[in-house]
Image (cartoon, rainbow, N blue to C red):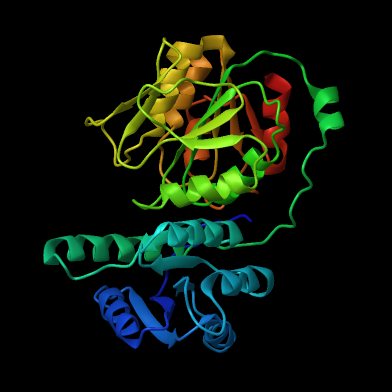
Length: 350
């Protein structure tokens, strides 16, 4: 799917979908504390949400995952197929099953996931509420368009297009819309993939484990969480863990750091890519995908300046053309390609 940011000229109209009336009331009060947001209705399940979308025409839907009659994932699939509009998953993090379902919801087309706020700490509650309101105002401007799934590349085509460039390290940065893009890329790689992929995906704290499990379930190669000191193995995809910066070292190992780096993200794509540039040099590759902000732009420029190949997802196939756009503005990108071509390009270079 792709997205363009439309200017906000009036209140953002939100439909809240949750099977708990108490949660619906809490979210309504929380969102309407911002005069730029109005909750135009609530829905008790996915089917109810679909019915109300057609009648109320919201700008954005918040969706719980576990609901009766029709769950959130099935509802998101229907919305993206028949009435595409931005959906943010807001649900409680209760166990690993939920985080996996949240990743599935992102794969179905949700633009973001958010942990359901709780009033345990008033200060934290207000900070979380403000973050959610700002996210809703931004993502309501995303015009979502569904695209048919591209076919995975077959092994024969992969062999024919290989140029044996011998690149050993691939660093990927992604944010909003990234899980869907990552699933397409990682799911297209063969069992004998001959490089190590390191990924920073901006995602709400607590959802990374579910993302790893979900990506691994549809991949021919191993998908793991980065651990301090682990080896960089060919044929593996390593996802940066929550709350830590991930780096590649000259000893062919992962290093995790808990230190301040300018910018809002931990893990930081810039930190990862700058380390890959130093370690891999000409044998490195940087890929910057859909997402807002500018994290990864400076890092991918470091890879470019060291002679590595750099790729950006194009605007047409990006949910939000932000991070990639910033990298292009720095003249740090060798190739701008649609999502469906990125795995092919990676395979040509390893």
